Every structure is written in C-alpha cells, then in structure tokens.
Length: 487
Image 1 (cartoon, rainbow, N blue to C red):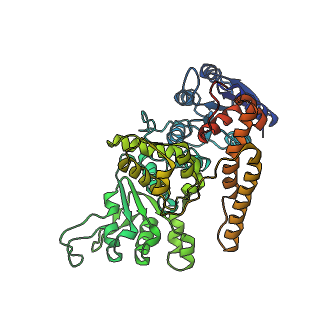
Image 2: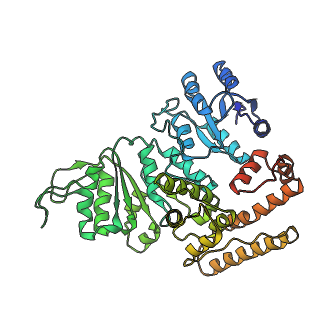
Image 3: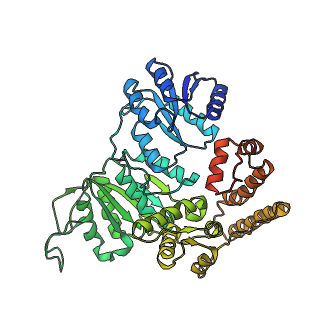
C-alpha cells in the first residue's frame, strides 16, 4: 500500500495519539487536530488523501462538515467516528457521503483495515454526492434502541443499505424487532415517500395468500364481488414487508419467485401484467436453509430473498442494552399519560440477568404492566420478581465481598462452561460463551480497579489498559457508581 496522508480530527488528545501511532506504523503520514476549523483548512489547501473525523467537536459538528468537504473535494474519502452510537448517526454519516461509520470505542485493527479499504477502493459514480435525507431534525425518536456491539453492527449494515433497493431477509427470534428493522430501511431509505405495506404470512389462510399478495379481479372466484388491489399494488413505489416468509405455502412461493425474477405479476383472474415496483424485505424466525433441505421452501426463492441476510440478536445476547430500552419504554408510557417510573439497582440487575424468551417485546410489555399497575415511582426487586415469577429467569448474582470476588468469578466461568458443554452435547449451537462470561466478569473487575485507585478514573483506565473514554463508557453502560468527588 502506497503511503498516504491522513487527516484526523478529534477533540480527544488520546484518540489522536493512538490513531497517529497506529497509522504511522502502517507507513502513513498523519496530521491530527482537535477542531473542525483546522481540518477544513487542510482540506481547502488540498492536503490529505483520507479524512477521519469525530462527530462532536468544540467548534462544529463533524457531520455538518462532511457536505462542505464533499463539495470542495468530491473524491476525498471520509471515515466518521462517534460515541453517539445510534442508528441515526450511522444513517446521517452514510447519507452525507461518508465512506464508513465507526462507533466508539473502536478496535485499532478495524480502523487500520477501514483505512486500507478506503485508500484502495475504486471511485464509484456516486462518490461525492450527498444523498437527500428526511432524518434531519430527528433526535432520539429512533426505531431501534441499543448501543451494544451487536446493535452497532446492525446500524452499520442498515446505513449501507439505505440507498439501495437490495432485497433483505431479517432473521431473528420472535420479539426481536424484525418489523422495526424493515420500517427503518423504509423510513430512512430512498423509498421513504412511498407506502410501507406489511403482510404476515402466518396470519393469512393458505387459500387467500395469492389474492392478498397479487390482488384479484371481480368474479375471479366465489365471493370476489369486486376488484381487490393486492399488497404488491398497495406498496407500489414503497416497501413490501413479508413477515414470517418461512410459513408461505409452496404454491405461493412459485408465484413470488416469478415476480422477483421477471419484475411483474398478474392478479388472480387477471391477464394484464402489472409492474412490481417495490422493495422486498422479508423476515422469519425459522431457519430457511433447513426448510429448503426439508423440501418446504424453494431453494431458488431462498437465494432470491437472501441477497442480504441480517440476523437480529436476541435480547439475552445484548443485555447491556436493557437499561436504555427500559428507560425508553418508561418514557413512552409517560408520554401516553402514565406516571413516570424507574427501576432501582437490584431490579435493573435482575432484568439484565433474566433470559427474555419473548425478547424486546416481552420487556416492553413488562414495562407497560409496571407503569399501569403499580403506584410506586421506583420499582424494586420484589415487584419485579412477582411479575416474572411464572417465567424462567437467571437471577443476578449477589454482590460479593472483595475477598471472595475471585472465587465468585471463577464459579461464574465454571457455570457458563457447564452450560456451554451441555448445549454442545445436546447438539445445539453453543454460541456467545465469551460475551456471557465477559459481561459477568467486567463489572467487578472495573469496580475493583476504581476501588484500588480511590475512584480516580484516569488511573483506573491505565491500570486496566483502557482508553479513559472507553472506561467512562463502560462505567455508564454498566451503571457503576463512582465515589462522588473523585475523578
């Protein structure tokens, strides 16, 4: 790779230093600044082969600077970094023309890989053109909530898909938010001004699915007293969301395949072809490949739908998002006229340890129940345990004294290993072991470090070998209480 000049803008000196060292080791020349004005000056002077910029800087928002950079130098690639890890941030960065969006804290190896890709990727026709967006002015009214690494990857993929019409199939357990993903693709995509039409295959009688999808003519069958516009026609110019696609009958699969291949369809009883002007987003909680092997799903249709597969993680795999989700649902209940509620620390710990078989939908229903049925403004552990008494849960482990924490952590690791091998012996996928153990070990490790440094976060970060901002984020995400008055 030919050495390049990389312009870095971030108000955090530590991040500027780390990036300068990492990219310097790759042979690149790095010019770093803590403000947007200096970055803009360098760009105007024609300096730099690549820009890496933060979003929040003291003099200007990095996202607002991107259009000016793209106008002045259309082919200059831009990588956006941000600790505001939401879907909207990823969408705005992509729509303004950023080559890549990188949530903080980041992995230096990933940064280096992104830089190499940005410097070597051929220029595309759309480079330098800012895509219009209706996301302006929207703050946190987002369809998807969560800042966990799993959700960050979802946001990045969605942001890349917004400007395309590629067919997407969303996989995930019931209650993970598959329709929310489809709605986000529509609301922030180029078909946002068209209709969003949803059809749940599992809720429609088999004999009516073709009529629901493609419509029918008057007299096409008994009871067809007038012409009916099917979902393809209703969704023209917009997005058609086919939920529970794995439950679609084989005969209807054949007609859907023909539409995807030829781009047109006929109504039931009709003869005139109609153009299928829709983006297809499908969703299922089932394993379509397994259905193909069983002869229950057409293999050719599977490949037509599976252009971009997207897996939504179950809530138990992103338990760090539960506090933010709970606050969001409590706020929504308050907006609907209910008294604002919150959870005490023990209740929140219990929520994070619970297995959530119903995923985000189950959590939302629980929060609504708590908001409606209880007069207490702060929900405690006994109330929560009573509400979840009928469902299997993994209660949060009791806090251990410093002298016994190592033993309790060892027990936690052994417990997760037993679960791992039990699942393996049963022929089930034993995924997520690393994340499950890290989540349980991370909090007491940080608490011990803060205790050893008397609450000094800078010294604790050095002790742990973490960036100070990374430690701050973990303290916030894990809701660790730092002794007041100590930095």
